[in-house]
Length: 161
Image (cartoon, rainbow, N blue to C red; front, side):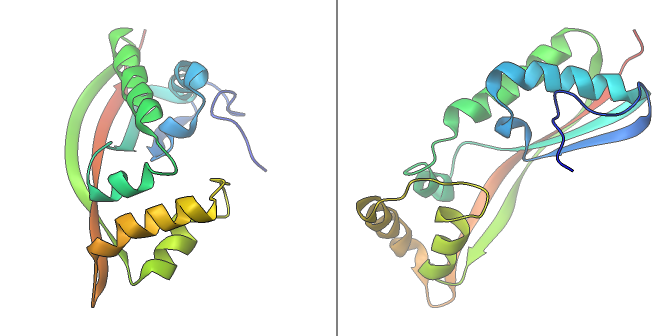
C-alpha cells in the first residue's frame, strides 16, 4: 500500500526514528512543510529525523540536469528543512556532507538506470538521448564511468512543545 508523507497513517508520537533518504525533494514543493509537520507529529518527543538529500553539483548532476533538472526542488527541500528548524519544533543535532560513489559500467547501464527508470518518464527524444550520451562519453573509460554524488545529511531531533 502506498501512502503519502503529507498524511501518515500512524498515531501521534508512535515512532523513535523517521528516515527521508533522497526523498524530500520528491514531495511537491507546496507540501514539503506538511510532510515535515506530519513527521514531527508521528515522532515521540526526543525522536529523530534523518534526512539525506543530494546536493545540486558535480559531473553526474551536470549530465542528469540535461533531462531532469532538480535544482529548484533540491533547493526547496533545504529551504523546507531550514523553515522547519525556525519553528522551534526541531533541533538540528548533526550535519554532514559526503560524496557517494556512483559507477556505470558503460553507456547502456547509465541509459537504462538513469534515462529510463521504471518510476519516471523523462520524455527522452532521440536528440536528447544523443546529447546526454555526448555528455556521458568523456567520463567513460575502460572500467566504466565513475562519479560522485554529493550528499547533505541533517539529523534533527523533535523538541517537545
